[in-house]
Image 1 (cartoon, helix red, strand yellow):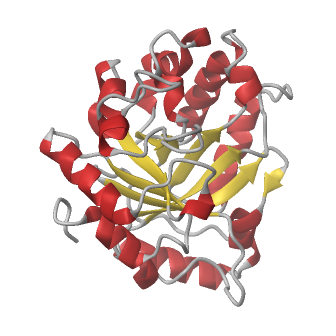
Image 2 (cartoon, rainbow, N blue to C red):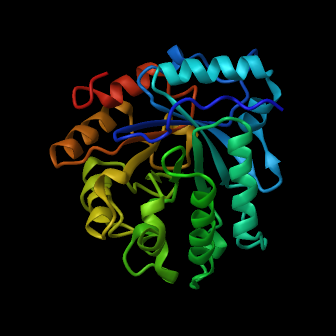
Length: 294
């Protein structure tokens, strides 16, 4: 299988405008044209599972080498990094006993084989993480450490996509604050899922940015930063449309207001959205608004 030549380092400064996709789209042959992603600078193929690639990750392997090279070159010219997302809701790596070092080696090799700019760790093993032990935290620390050993920071991006409540202080097992304390220097940024947490969590600018309250106090954007995580590594994640998540949706114009308010307080992290093509160029243009004009 042909590698896609990597001509530039993958390092990317904030802000990050991130879209995921695992959706099969009729008539497509690989990722969308770079022009369709105007306003985004990160495109994440979902998902790479313990068992191998699925959905858009597997589609990337099915197109011919020339098409892959052409797409990757066009994305690079447009300033768009291409990553693959690991695990998602399908995999529970800690609970199923996957070895973190071996899994990292396998996934890092896949990133290199298929010429991508890095990997996103969408760990959603809730039973392990919420179990009151350090097993999930220790798994993530070992996994991330080995990923970075295989994917040097000068050449590859590593991101994580935790749910916002995992950054609360006092979370069982230390939560993502423990992960960040141990290996945060190896993680380029966090695509934080401010959705699917029930009720009206993270649906106003105040409870998204300043005081989350509700079932998960201390997990808004600036509260997470106050808990010790670098502010500009915090990317606000939201569903593109209401149907893309169970809860947490806000209209793009409302999100734009929140983004503007956050920037005024010194934040520069960016926005992540699930998922393309619901989050098209018009969507991200609205969200960036006057705070981050294209």
